[in-house]
Length: 398
Image (cartoon, rainbow, N blue to C red):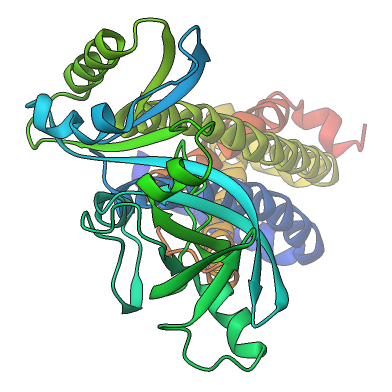
């Protein structure tokens, strides 16, 4: 077919023109390259952020049900017995861990260590929250009203700095009450995407019955529960709500499931990804406008060349295709270079933030496809202008 030799000839002409005008070609490449790299880097980072956020949820489990006591006419809130019987009373709940939270001043050997949270908890709290035990043991169901405690990683470091050596078996004073250390936690990485924060590193954990005995006014502020496998998270939340309101009719409870939060996060991340794509797209459009300006200048400078080609028999569509091919070649080359730059920037940011490196192939394909489309769109006007040039006026320099 005649069209292929013509396209090949136009391609050679376009490549030669780009080589002859290296500075202009470089400027066009830089504009498109920045636009494409912005699209790829921003969209890929959005995907990585979504992956990292989801990984935080999955580290504790997507079957979590978090119950908060929001107050009400019943000043007692959730009774300890009701909270501990939650898993036994509801088939949809596999495990439940209530917590009473307070603040305290910690002393060791007569010296003040600092202040932090004092958490009254049950045995199940360690497994539900996945607290990493470094040495010793955790609070057990046999420690009813006992003055035993498990200390966080930072508390143990403070004790060692005071010359305490191994904290196990030592006495820690919490607001003038002595507790024996039976366990030490390893460093705990907080997951801020969850509806409840543990703050384990600067906290001390004591039996929940002891916490209620020391301060009878502190209610259970949160229960972290785990639904049974295969149970719909909405069913589990409804069962918990019915159970708690039957035990404490005048109280108000906030019940949140991890799957609800994941769904909200996914929707937010989709909007976030669209915004990032829009920002990158603006950069690409700016680069396309630069390409159009370059092509318009090229048409103005090559009027004589265009006129000669027209006088020798080239048709308008031949001239149009030449300049369109030149524009597409320029933006496509910028797209390839922008892809490399965008992936490199994504890898560098992931490396320095400690995130896992992911490649969004959708953004790569979209960036390259958009670059070619930009070349076609912004190259059409210069190509159309070149095709409409009057050969006589072009040869006369008008």
